[in-house]
Length: 315
Image 1 (cartoon, rainbow, N blue to C red):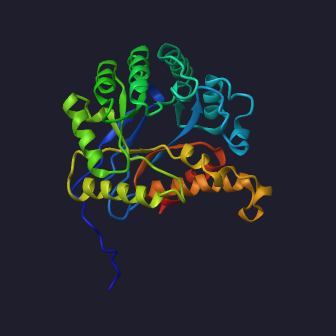
Image 2: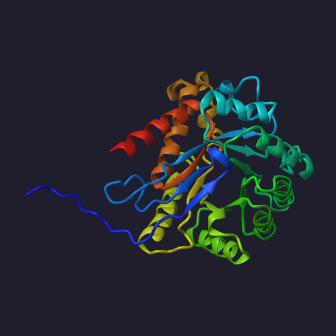
Image 3: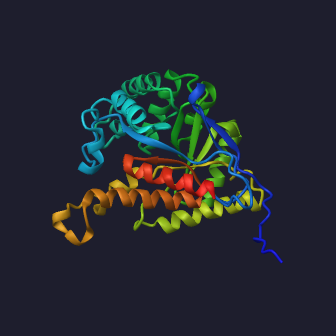
């Protein structure tokens, strides 16, 4: 008698969301099974990777992370183009570091002009990520939304403290919102309900469950993402049937393990290789938990993840 793999029937399905516009627009979601359980269901749209770009010089980045972008880190447009032309970026995530009230505190008008320049210079989907300061993000992201009307940017993080104004702006100017909550499935569902009640269409929403790097609570992040997928696929919870976006790169490269020079602790190994592997391992973890869009930093870590996605989807 031939062996048959036991299969779990799934009654739910992840919604498909289109990010960006034109020929390079990307569709994510659509899964009818757990991540890469292709013997039980389908993943019509494989996970995508967005490369990080900062709107100001990334002074806090370790040398290993800066090296691939030498010469362009003071120009977001050139930086974004390098990611696309040299490293084949499918998406760009513009981190609005300069708008942080505790840092440069760049104004909304100036920040929005930078976003528009980057959006007009590239043909792949653009994610615009604020500082998680509710007042500042409301001011900046609503201005970005207005100035980039109809470009279908992906705006976030949109949290309970600022969802009304940012969500309304996204509806009016035709952008996608990143529903962001702090590692809690109940809060995630609640915010999705609030955004839906506000009028944000399902096709304009993607979820950020909040993630962290290996060694910094990633098992908790994994558990919450896993529970989200279980509710979405086996309990038909339509308020959790959204694709997941994971801003993993900056979480990894800010850790001491990614920055500590080799000579200060030789037993930890080469600092460059260490950072790349930490990012790849962290990204792989959230990928297996259900991540649909990964925001990453180092081209070599991205190559490792692309290879793993190809391997997993081929079997």
